[in-house]
Image (tube, rainbow, N blue to C red; front, side, top):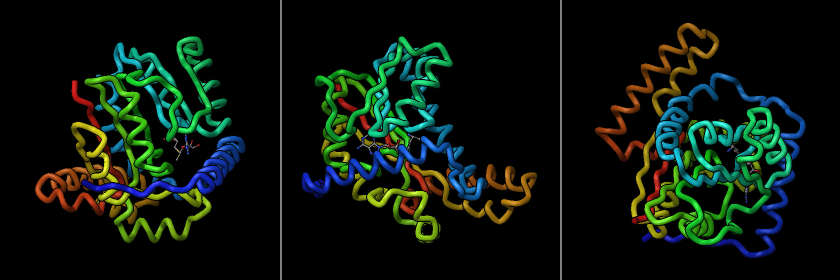
Amino acid sequence: MDSLPSKTDADLARRLEAERAFHNAKFGEAQEHGAPDAIYELPRVAYRWFEGEVKPRAKGAAVLEFGCGDSSYAVKLNQWGGTVTAIDISDEAIEETRKAVTEAGFSNATTLLRMNAEDLEFPDESFDLVIGRAILHHLDLEKSYAAIARVLKPGGAAIFLEPLAHNALINLYRRFTPHLRTEDEHPLKMREVRAARKHFDGVEAKFFTLTSMGALVAAKAPKLFEPLKNGLDKVDAGLFKVAPFAGRWAWTTGMVMKKAV
Ligand SMILES: C[S@@+](CC[C@H](N)C(=O)[O-])C[C@H]1O[C@@H](n2cnc3c(N)ncnc32)[C@H](O)[C@@H]1O
């Protein structure tokens, strides 16, 4: 079974402060991400999958959102019938989420907390559903997987959408855009995805965005970009079905981690 190293306490304190400061600045200044917009259109297929997994499980469920950031699912989770708790290490993330749930009329129904996702302050078996987007790769995975498994109720599930580490083209893009990332974030290696098996009774991984990156050749021609991207999303889905090993080169993995009843 894959097992991952954990970091020292000194490194942990430095990392948490660096993550907090980076994201406070990012969310507080409401700055543009500065990346070409077409790139951030590519994961829409993954977001649709994520919502398709989360929405039917949210009704009547106690839901914890990990690393809610400034584009939290808290409003949608409330609309889908969940009882929502959202956490983040960044004060600005919590404030932005507070504004969003207040505007939508869900402030009384939503618990928002600044909390380290690796060291959850909730009792065992508190949640039916734990969700997160682009957060596990900011964390110590062994600690986070263990923390999620501890707070999940029997029969509960955790749904995450995370970037992967093995695609040379995306890694090149990452190398040229270091200002978009924290020093410590680490897109997941396949062995880190597999390491979740130690903590959960079932782990499934889906993959998104490989050939669809080819749609970027039409980034400046929106009328062509959209159908090309949609067509290549279908090619990707077929490819990952017939050749699951190709998933490691995808941009994104969707993880469903289940705790037995
Ligand atoms: C890439 S952002 C993703 C935000 C949001 N989930 C989204 O999809 O836009 C990562 C988030 O994780 C938060 N974060 C980083 N380390 C954390 C930790 N140890 N505990 C809780 N949140 C953390 C950051 O503050 C940031 O809001």
